[in-house]
Length: 503
Ligand code: ADP
Image (cartoon, rainbow, N blue to C red; front, side, top):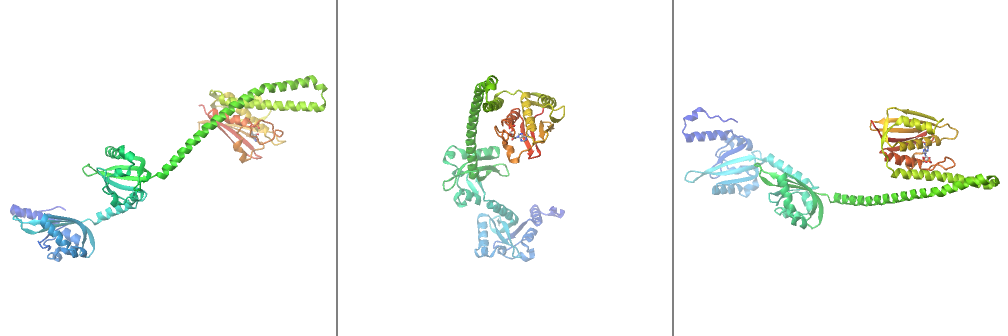
């Protein structure tokens, strides 16, 4: 509120002029109760702020003793007299406490009582300034309650040197100390002796001071000596002038999480060992099967060669029984030959370098059909411009395997129909699908078909080695792609490979 002093004031002596100005000022203050007491504590003046705060008008209160503003208990304890006595002796008394309004309601007041004396030091009375801090106190209390209701976090503050200055219930729960036990103690108490020795607490405060923040995890010690793994955030608290006033510290007990992480890490390490072990065994097994297949070829050739020689040279002399046996030997060795050939191919796919080149899809598919499936009902629907990155002989082998299966796994008496499509997948890859009208596959078998020797049918029903799809999988993965299948029993199947698109 603007304070106006009438020009008439100018006619007064400087002293009176000052007094007048001062009175106008006091009169204009509304947020503070400012009034005078005589030496015995009787109210002698009253400003609008006092009326607003305490509800008495000047007429009502002037002449009354100021103890009417005190709660009964304080009056019984002679608090008003005590306050005046202290102010009279030391010049000033300050207090924060409950005071009473005219209607009996309470407010939280900050009170300053100042002694007033004449030039010779004789007590003339007291000046009293009262401020209503009820709202601030409520806000502080709400904040304190909030901090205290947090039970999962330990929230506390330190002074600038690291001594504990406040403590919430979460801190008590996590660390085991009550506020009375810990306030005033140095926070290095929470560290393990090793960390304390190594200067960790000082480093934490230094980092927080210098960078405005410290965050970390580590072992801390509870009152009972047990340890817990904690996550910590320390923030410096600065006063209005930017000087360090202390630190706030938030700690969380994450021992359970740490245990879980450790367990996970242990598990992962174990798994890695197992995987490495398996990879080694697989590689050994593969090398073994490769060399066995390789070594089997020579005796196999001998069996096949001698069986044909027997047939050619002595066939005419053999009775039908011996003839039949010979046929069985030749059939079995041919089958074994196919198996060895496929196994060698499968093994070779793991070890050879597959150089990548651009392969236009449609021309390759057309060529494969002409060379291997002439006369079959095979339709191709592929954009002529689609080009993939891959190893051409491997892709050719994959497609031949898939088309052969599409033609082979057919219901008796039904003419095979195969459709090959190629579509771009968002410009990143090309999906080549081979769809047939064959017998289809039950859903629960789908996952295992791509493994070596997995077959769903007897040799008599549908011939094969059970290696074709394993080659499809290994080949497509080695070219940086993938493969899959969708099928319904009785309704045909779609096998697909997806390879990187070359633009
Ligand atoms: P093979 O064809 O030599 O038996 P594959 O590895 O190519 O071996 O296929 C494995 C098995 O998957 C086959 O034995 C068959 O049971 C099933 N299968 C593969 N392709 C088809 C298809 N198009 N339709 C139905 N079943 C199929």
